[in-house]
Amino acid sequence: MTVKTAISLENSLFQKVNDLAQELKISRSHLFTLAVQQFIESYENQRLLEKINAVYADGPDPEEVALLQRMRAHHRQLVEGQW
Image (cartoon, rainbow, N blue to C red):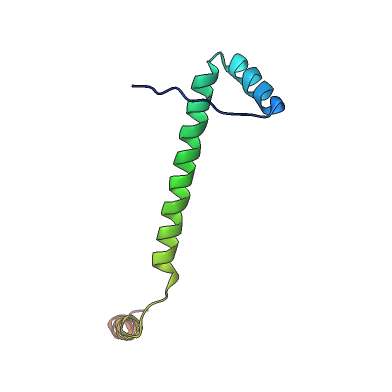
């Protein structure tokens, strides 16, 4: 199902849209659809990246730091004298 909508554009932008649609041999509607789809995908990717960065922004808590130190010490003991 499709929905018709009306938008207002500056004349210069409208001309660029017309020119690009003709160059790509697609309708203006299809060009707008492609552009909006790409914008939404880019926006969603940016939001996902921000969420991922927020999760990893905080450093390890004290318990994790202590665990890492114990693991390193244990590993040192395991490989001591092997090299």
